[in-house]
Image (tube, rainbow, N blue to C red; front, side):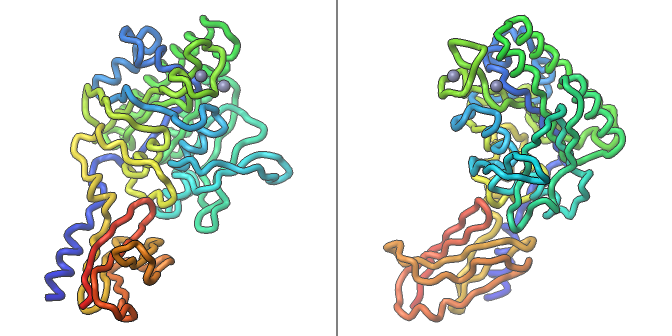
Length: 380
Ligand SMILES: [Zn+2]
Ligand SMILES: [Zn+2]
């Protein structure tokens, strides 16, 4: 009996099995959707429109929270809206994210080197920091290359990083569209979008000519926020122009020539990247942008494990060491017992519920990162 049940447990432990091993995320700061994929003629993004024929884009992607870069970038890093706090670090006043970032998850869970992850942007004196989370933190931060002043400088630096370091995870931040937008000069704003469009094209073609990246790399292009419907020189409110953003993805696991009409949110970007890299963004609240994948095992990924009850014990199997919370409730939702609230080893874990004396139906609720699995069981 036991061996049959354990076999069932093993069979549902499925992780991402696609071809992507590397992820590049390009953030074009403050391009409004009406000037990108919301324009039926793709006037300012001819290259990305062409790339989309071999990829997928979303026409219902939003920043539904705070349409400022200072809030949106942490959401793009962490996969949630846990936010940032002010901190003085090495004599500089800046901000750090509350929750771990995808770089930290990747480096810790994959035992990756610092130069397996890069964050590349123009020179900024008070760089925002990733988290000081007790389970992650500075030991797992990426390499940051903050240098130059223009988007073309950032492209040149990115090409050098690709040549010299071959990182598996890169965030490339392009600031000029937002800067030009704030100037109120329409010509400068749309030219900056056209330039970013060319940069995306150059980056993608470079990756396709590089044996390390060719055929196993997913590239995602998105924005942190849009711009007001009524005034392209500003942003920061909850109007559709500020909230509606672009999302384009290309890669071996991504559908071709596909437009998704499903609604997704900014925080989903990092969670989708984590899914591609097969890491668990345990404190993230976003979801995987499942609709863009050719074949998807997202449900299994989110499920991760099944819970089995027998011999007065609750059993489940972990594929890797995981921080879990396992609580038993009665049918009225009253907490009966906290069985685990710590990191557990990989393999089969089991917990006795013999302290629950009263017979009846109970619910075991297992939380692994953002996944919550519940199971009803009967105590005689
Ligand atoms: Zn701005
Ligand atoms: Zn607005």
